[in-house]
Amino acid sequence: MPKLIAGAFVTLDNVVQDPGGFGEIEHGGWALEYFDDLSRQRATDALLASDTFLLGRVTYEILEKAWSSNTGPYAEAMNNLPKAVVTSTLSGPLPWNATALTGEAAQTVAKLKQERGGNIVMYGSFTLMRTLLDHGLIDELNLGVHPVVVGAGRRLFDTVLPRSLRFVAATPSATGVVTLTYAP
Image 1: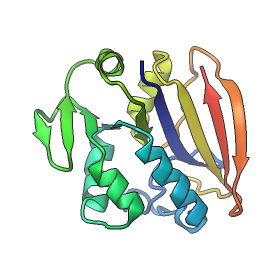
Image 2 (image 1 turned 180 degrees about the horizontal axis):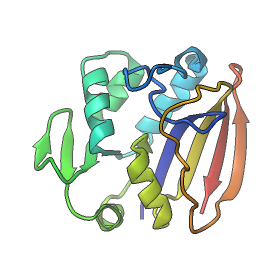
Image 3 (image 1 turned 30 degrees about the vertical axis):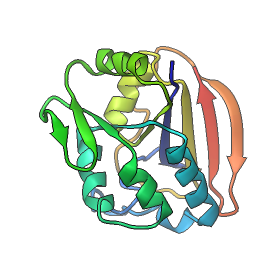
Image 4 (image 1 turned 90 degrees about the horizontal axis):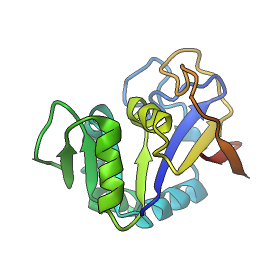
């Protein structure tokens, strides 16, 4: 069974919204100055090591608009990777090498994990991420903690999880970001 590897950029005050500066919040783009060549290479490698990119509808629409026409190794890896979009409002094949997955999110992703042979990677999609954490469907959670406080925006953990996570590793970067890896 493939692993579902979820990742998120997060600030010191637990904000996960708009790290790339897509206009969602006033201080969006807070992660950009911390994304160096090594970070880009790690992100590209993670995409290349996966068979599917899992997203919720909102994140799909933001990323498709931002990345579908970009070039370079990271953009090419992202554009070529098949995407599975968990949604209740879209259907069928979608632009950007994507397919809509309908139905209850946890059941849909559990079925996807049984069908796919290789790893599934997921960035953002925080409502979906919380649901999948609540149902024990995420096999690895990577949080890139950025040394910045933005004060406002959606937070990853605004509710208590019904289970604890086990610490696996901490990987610091030269830019001050520490990636914390957890497992169920």
